[in-house]
Image (tube, rainbow, N blue to C red; front, side, top):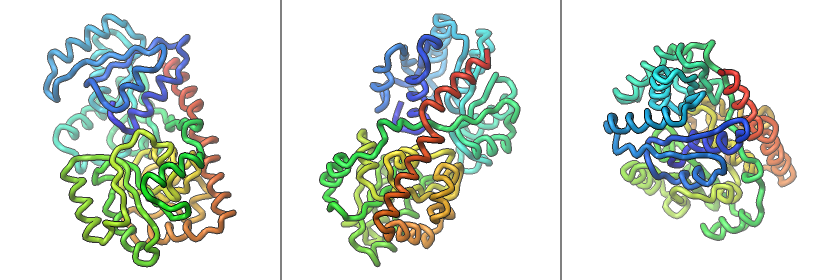
Length: 368
């Protein structure tokens, strides 16, 4: 239960499902993780750690999981991501239980995956006819998995849901965060929120930041999220080489994300591959204007109004990213406020938690 989009969506689904209709047990492979306390705090939800010791700790882990299934006798086994999906399918066949898979990625090839990930992905596609239902969180995720061989007639798209009460405009939080990082009241702050991973293409963000810094040196940049020490060091070295040392903040992982979003003027996704980026949706719910690469469902998430402003750019395009940032930074205050309200309204209308929970409940009941 580390910080991540799929983990966040699991928590929101579990939180929102009607406990008079669903009796819920969440089984995690490993103990710990930043989001585990929140999961355990949910009323009416039983959380069990299967205490897996490592990747190849399979016999004892499998035995504990089988005992849990026999004890709870579930009507539905609901898996999250490739490995758990396969295990749910095996257990479902052994226990005579309905199985639902969920997919939270969008990839049309196996390129870049190690042998184990490729093997799991191929096996999942071959067996995708067997689950009662496969829930995908984006239209591009559905299309890409069909290209990998998944059965279209087994699949249903249910977009991610955002807690728009938690993620909302907050002037006090904005000032608090900007004071923490030494950002002046009207000084522009552009952020990228996401794990430090090559797929997020932080190098594009940094190269564009260096270009913008040359003409607008007052702008500051922030990267929120963590990754391996080696990759973080690589990115920090690149930022130094680009002359960004005094202009960029490496904030690491944070637990006060609503406040972080409110502190930003622009939230950016430079990803080369996405399904439906939660962080952009959360930022928009806080009224922050987005700039996103045209991958996955990002353009659909941003919405028609913001697309027409030119805030969806080609993946890898430094010039396009700089131009999009400059477009937003030069907006008159009234126009910026109008687009800010439109960004939040896009999330309220299309990506609410109630929509996610209601659609998920109907889908699960429909499997029985």
